[in-house]
Amino acid sequence: MHALRIILERFGLTDSDLVAEGGESTVFALGSDKILRVGRSGVTLTTRKYELVHEISSHGLPWAVPRLLDHGSVGDRHYAIETGLPGRSLDIVLQRLDGKPRVRALRNYAEGALRIREARIRRPWFGELYHEPPVRRETWPAYLEERARLQIGKAGEAFAAEVPGLEEAMQRFVTDIKTLGPIDVGLVHGDYFPGNVLVDEDLEITGVIDFGWSTLMGDPRLDAVCASAFLEVDRPWCTPVDAELVRQYVVERDPSVASVFDVYRTFCALHFSFVIHYGIPLYRWCVQALREGPP
Image (cartoon, rainbow, N blue to C red; front, side):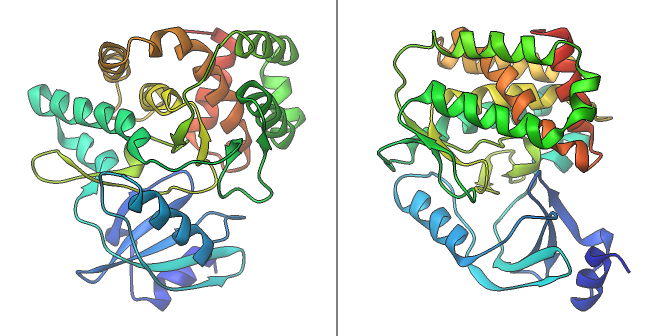
């Protein structure tokens, strides 16, 4: 039996208990005050991750964070029982929204991407806080280049075959990141998309989840770009209008985002190319984004 099914049966849950699904884990309601988080293959949920999340929260993150109650594994799938957070995944909520409520939800979502930088944590390097082993470098361009090369290496020959001129695209990316200029280093979630954002009935953000292997110290504008770029991923409820609305909002709030948007969008496509192994729509977006370039 599939490991996920075994875990769900162990806790008496079914697919109907699903409340959120992110790139790093899938979340199920476990009673009224707890959740079961099941990590994807290769993602180890440890107390160290939760210590990181609490550090982030205690230094200015404007939302609640979960507390680890227990954890374990079945096969290669790791799970954790956490205290629950209020709200529902925006990924699910957006499926039933249109008109002004949809615009309001997307603007709040975009604002959330800009507020992650409020967490006042510091490190003497650019790079990952939780990834094992982490990439950490003295400069932001050095980090971006190394992580991008590592990720396309994980994606392998199949990815290279789907993206003609991948090495040329990589070289353009390396050239572009060297012109970024000084970076006001701060916290970057690294995987900011609707599945990792919780909202209440008023469509206000109540929590941002899955601070983990993508979380790093770098340019906080990366989250603002992710917020828009990931809305381009092919899902039945997403439209090009959503991505453009978020892009316009973050640029209005921080005009400097416009100057880095294309290069960070390329980084997202390179960074998440490894999801070829999971067969999810994000992979098709990575291929398309690198084939076609900026929208």
